Length: 197
Image (cartoon, rainbow, N blue to C red; front, side):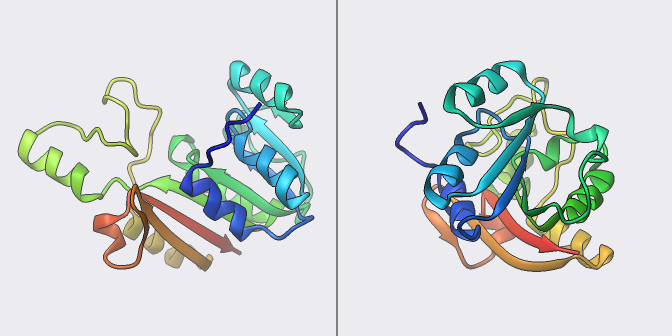
């Protein structure tokens, strides 16, 4: 069963999604977020996950999940077939970011993206003073074991959306203390964006 505690990023995403919506969670992991959305918001939810152990955890929770690789695309899904598409802590791990985002915006009316901010001050300090790849609570991996392929910051993502004419509908920034309102590119550990085409 899912833990009773809910992470702050999951709380925020839960708050962004309307009850009884349809949701596709790409890289859903063990299905914790999707389970809560189904239980608390009565969404029609489906997950896509590549890790077999995570899939077993989803199934144990009763979460509908398909084994799949986000990078292979969403060709099986029609345009606007979901109200929301979630990429939480998975966008920075895909090989073909541009293709995945375009597909996500085609399939979901709204896309919610959460990612670690690689420009957080602790990451900057570790790189500047220790001369080592950052390891923080939101970036908990050593350089040789990280699943992250894209090292983006909050400012990078905002610039990217502008350059592609994606509409940023909501943006929320958090760290271990809560929501960050000032200088998010420096103080936020995680950025959460709701975008649309």
